[in-house]
Image (spheres, rainbow, N blue to C red):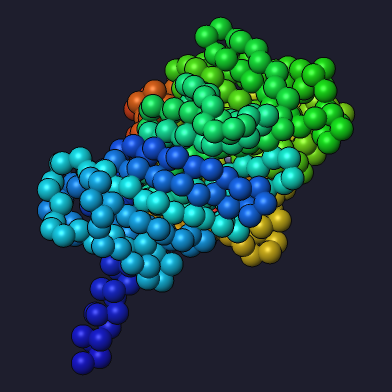
Length: 452
Ligand SMILES: [Zn+2]
């Protein structure tokens, strides 16, 4: 009995431990592929709400799909239609459950239309003269919640004619709707991760410029509110064309969208969307005083390639978005300011990791099983993640490291990735087996002792 008991315990332990370094990273598969979203929305500054309709195009990938579920927190649902016919729906545990009369046909495209209102406590910020969405798309848009399943996005935003909007992709029209209301029509025609859907709207001033084929635009609040004026905006964003060239060179492909906007909003904010990012006035003023503080401009822009085009398949591989971008900001600073700036950025990452060690907040950087967003250890994903790229660069040397990064980037353009995709790309170019390196530093908890 005792021997059997021990054998069972050993077997459980063996399965559990062998699981840690099992072959390949786990990626959940979905029953449905979401293809395109078209949202017709009108925000209300007073009510701090947004209302309208979303039309979602999707395809069933497996047989017997009879229901679809969407996060419903903060929302009131008025009607749900499938291919223009009203369909049964109910709310349960803050989820909208849509039930179809008969199972969906595999590979057929369906159109789901939801008429709703949302009062998002998170995911949108409202001020008296501007508003914007931030990261939590599911809170303001009825939408799926899988980051690996990218979709294209079209937004018809109804707003007062004196306001200026920013959105994903490009503004394809602006027409009068009624009285002083206009509709700004934004179209992002290549698929993007759901958390990068978004828009901003406000009494913005705008500076437009071009760089090669790229259209750049900077939106900021009036001088009386923001303390900013055209020269200050030009000064703070002066290196953006150089940043674009630097990241294009490292990725091996050009800026994914032909246009890019920075929206300077109140307070502290640094959040990428696709085709634009939100940056806080506080950061802009700091960077105007000390050019070395321009990290947020490079960081959010770098996400156009790493994050928005090449997206982690789930939160177990979040470091492929954030650790890599942190490292690339350090590399950009090295290019712009010299070696000491690179060392300074890497030094900041080392200090952050050391603080996490002191607080006993250590975890692996990536996981072979799927973790939830709340379980992300941000210091490990951002800072230890950046250090792993720093170590790979030292280990492989300049030429191999950058060509491996370019190979990884070009191969996974407009895709979703796991850590294994990065490992394979670096192994192919370097002709080295990096299993031990990845198991020790990425999937393992060990903290490297680095001196600069
Ligand atoms: Zn980031």
